Amino acid sequence: MTRTLQSIDPALGSVVGEVAVTSVGEIAAVVARARAAQPAWAELGLAERARRVTAAAEALKVRAIEIGTLASHEMGKPLKEAIGEVSYCAESLAESVAEIVTALEPETLEDKSVHSELRFDPLGVAACITPWNFPVAMPQDVVIPSLLAGNTVLLKPSEKTPLCAQAWAECLIGAVGRDVLALIHGDEMQGKALVQADVNLIAFVGSRAAGKHIMREAAGGLKRLVLELGGKDALIVLDDADLDLATAFAARNCFRNAGQVCVSTERIFVHERVATRFVAELSKRAEALVQGDPANESTQIGPMADAGQKSHVLALIEDAVRSGATVAVGGQTKGNFVRPTVLTGVTPSMRIMQEETFGPVACVMSVKSDDEAVRLANGTPFGLGGAVFGEREHALRVARALDTGMVGINKGCGGASGSPWVGAKESGFGYHSGKAGHRQFAQVRVISVAR
Image 1 (cartoon, rainbow, N blue to C red):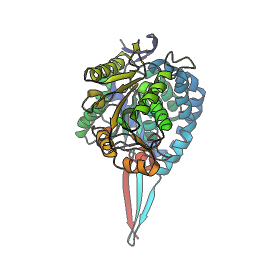
Image 2: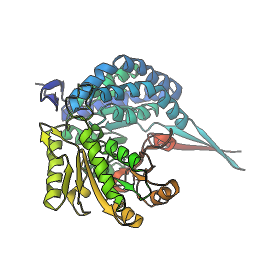
Image 3: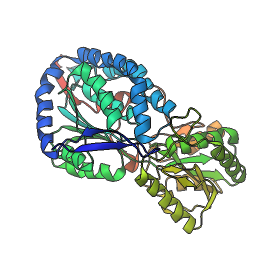
């Protein structure tokens, strides 16, 4: 009898739908089919692979409302944002493919005696394991460069969002073929089996703990890894910051998607000269956010993805309060909802200042100097993103001292078109996007002849 996986709406508690679970015993056969299909996929050449992948954009556009609605029901994202995620993926696909093609085209190097060509060839079979918080954008970020590099792909989406991920994948499968892209459905058990299977590349987006497990398991075969792991992003607000700009950013980046974003701002270090004003304004903005049914057009903040995620967030808030923190606003819960929360009186040793919260909680700490802010911001094993708000040159000096892969000055951490998405320290191993990131999905091969 085939076991099924039910997808549950976190706002309503109702069953959205179900998919058949891939048994662990089936995974080797799925991998074997992908490996058998890989040579023909690679033989098509980069241009033809790009043409076929780009063709999926039309199917994505046609199904954007359907897939976005599924995503909203599966993980609680406001409907407008969920449909927007899918629409963006459809509309940006051709541009993304063009950027990846440019990165993967052969590159020539010459000196007085040797002509060399750098080729970016397939690795073989790629396993892509993706999370639930951006259940369409995250698969697209790792599956597309894998396919264009000439690899066949096994996608294992989160067990919390299998329906929208499958619908997205079907659009691609219609363009590239069923064994070129195949789905593995299940939970941690299927993910571990896939990591242990006969694959050449593992691209994973998820927790630091899972990333460490994958590294250990991949070591035996020295499988190639692209790991985007957790974050504990800091916002530093300098004494010369535009407070309206800084608090607007903080409210948006702490609470959007109910704080379930890898680069959510979780820690805020504010110069003592402006700390009182900052907390008052951020609290006002937090209280004004509309939380409720994701299907309502006015809703800005939905529920946590499930009861387990809600329990994790509440446990960190309660631990902080027991240790002396104060809830300025928020903290209330109902069902799987957690109100946007501002905590003051936090200290660096509190769990909520060290562990990834992944919830709508802003922890604000007053500091006396730039040096203190930098020291505290760097005081975790994480190093994904961050932001510094203040006078431009002043903020740039502070930003250069942060141990993170990405830092925004008076903005979020995302870079210009073509920038990689990269973490430092324990927030990543390898990275994706941008020219160098796209090339990590391929085998670099140097072919040289004498001149």
